Amino acid sequence: MDNLGEVLKKLREAAGFISGDHIAGGLGVSRTAVWKYMNQLERYGYDIDKSKGKGYRLINTPDRLYAWEIDRYRTSAKIGSKIIHRDNLDSTNSFAFSLAMGGEPEGTCVVAESQSKGRGRLGRKWSSPESTNIYLSVILRPSVHPSVVYPITFLSSLAVSDTIEQSTDLKPTLKWPNDVLIGPRKISGTLIELSTEADMVRFVVIGIGLNVNLEMKDMDREIKPKATSFLAETKKTYERPRVCGILLSNLERYYGVFKDEGPRAICDIWEEKAQICGKYLEINQMGEVYSGRAKGIDRDGAILLEINGTTKKILAGDVNF
Image (cartoon, rainbow, N blue to C red):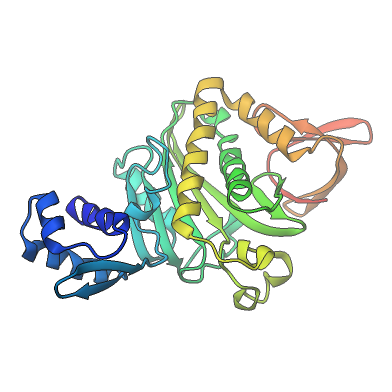
């Protein structure tokens, strides 16, 4: 954003009005350039009070997932270092996947205000109304064998869980393999897509949908009984760029554990946080239902289910508690 970002920063730092001369002098540009920057900010949705003889004053900031707004709260070094913002996409994952195929570097993040064809696991629709939630996809390029890449799915749910705890008073729970719940209702889901070769992972795209300011009345009829949001649970609205910045920072922290300590470490963290051991579960795997007590998570991310004294390893499926 360069000078535009600096102009916005000066507006935020000012106690009241700040003169065009002061901004121009600080940036080494003309007053005409400052005036153009103000007009540009207004086009982005910023409410700026312009007063002859006084200068400029920032009145309101749009709740938009602009890169420079997210960067105010992001502490990650790589994940989110490049953020591509769009008003609408068919799917952030589809867009990020095409970018990754073209060589887009690790850490690039795609965010959208809405999605027309948002997707969840197993081809399910992800409801994506405009400017209420967070829809993002991150490109990762881990140097691992395809056989050990599956635990990356836990990175997102762990990062989302921490983000919820840091942003609200809510106590999330984790549902295998990648859902985050508040009570019995789903507040976030993940879609992992990857490209591999015989002995290496080319890239992974982590797509995250997180319900933030979605009202119950605006939820699709089919998801209303089983979905929730920050707003629905707390009766408060939240600054989405702040939530997004915290989320990207948490995602990088867990990705660091994955790279430095290995997939097993991430599985152990997820298993402990989910407190899954000993729970009685029903897992639907392509129409076949398995019931038993969870013994934990295997090193490849599979769930270990004890059924009549025998341990069955299940790598994919839908869980019912």
